[in-house]
Image 1 (tube, rainbow, N blue to C red):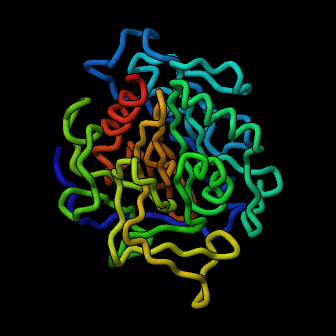
Image 2 (tube, helix red, strand yellow; image 1 turned 180 degrees about the vertical axis):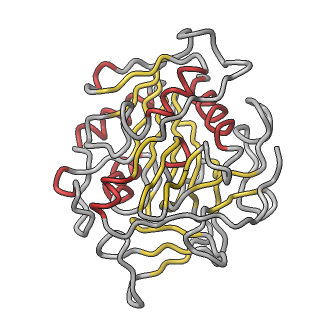
Length: 305
């Protein structure tokens, strides 16, 4: 794959939560044809996409392109409304859960999206062989998912994570070239196409347990802004350094697996429309030529127990 070089990319940041909800949509795209699907049609493991926690990304919404991609790769993809239907060889995707009190109310306090009994159930299911992809984006989603992440040894900064670069609101590129993409079986060609750069679109950051493998790693001058209200920053907004923090990591947990990521748009295809035009962000964006193959490699890793 070609390393992404610096280019002039317009990336729109929406500062008003209500505008973000109304204008951020799944892109209406045809997923590129996959020459060598991981499985024959519908012969792969079942992937459930959670919709029980007011998730900002669901199968028939902002994660439809993600669902379509995995269906094309041979998986069976469905929505989840009951955790107890999960089997040990299933894959559960939880993307941007939110507590009811914080729906369209992206300000502190951020309430946990998961009840204690749900966390114990999910933790036990992974321990027995289940595979979990937990995605918790920038505030408020990182805060809402943190109790579940804590159960596996991860801990989120509930804010907005940025690489140190000239224009803060450009996409973030984690690459071998800038030493932010850590080599792993997800990227080194073991499970599919070799990947040397991944693009994300403003997410969160987290610490990882010693037994986890980091994939997207921040460096010394990268930082997390933690405002009281999402997207509202000023000179007094708390700022935390991100040295030794991550935006992507994997972990073998008991008989199962968990992958944790701090950005959701990288896994799907979305658009933002405002009075200046419509802008792509996700695996269909010119700035993210490697994301599609990265998704395929990651989910294939989750499928191999």
